[in-house]
Length: 351
Image (cartoon, rainbow, N blue to C red; front, side, top):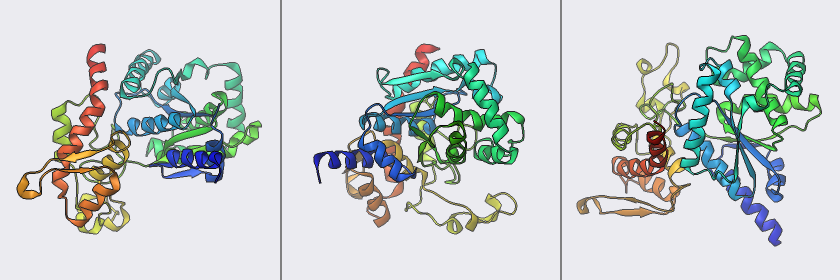
């Protein structure tokens, strides 16, 4: 293997680290082989304080910067307005604070282009492109694309326009790689379908996993549904949430062993649910990408302190019974607190 091929493979592996899928893998390999001048982006609604869902994709952006990509963070104020998240003035104030939090979390301001949606989404060319896509796209297709984001509230006209604008953002920001959690997959597939109708190439897409609710292990963790951790949380808040987190002694818990029908909506059975271990997920997707080692402190009678240099080693220790799940929780709380502290401090300064 030549040096160029080895470098391309190393870049590809870094980009795919902790990602669920690339659409398509062959397209991503081409980008990884020649990343100079290539642009990757994530769009965020400025709707509140950064939480671990935001931070997961931000960590991926840092890895893309390491791989040689230019990185764009879209602070989507017009999208947030369409999603009824406040007045534009309120949303823009939140966007400014979120940018400061992203930088505090670790995105290099010298290597990250922060863009406000209203800086280009109200331009004539953008609006005319939006009209073209409205003509080309059925309401059913648009609503299906928005379903994972809006949940049961996907019936407004604004929610049909929303995913079309996400597709157009890819064109008008001139990006090669669209990054998002798996809840963005349907929107990205819409973009791959409709952008060629405007003479644009189908964008390559990279999807990161969804973290389960800390308390139950069910579904995605978000600021509006279930228990999450955000930059507003104190050290004590984080410790308490991690201490109470669902953490069976396996990375692949059996929903039928941990759930009953009473825990779920009517008509949903435990076998229908994907159950995760959120504590191990947080180690995998948040802690080990940012820290070389993790030390779990234990009393000598329980085996003493043990240091792990990879997520796989920690998971194996839990699966084998060598490490009790509750023993690793203080180490997780400490690592998350260290990641969040710079953003928490920025919020305090801003307030």
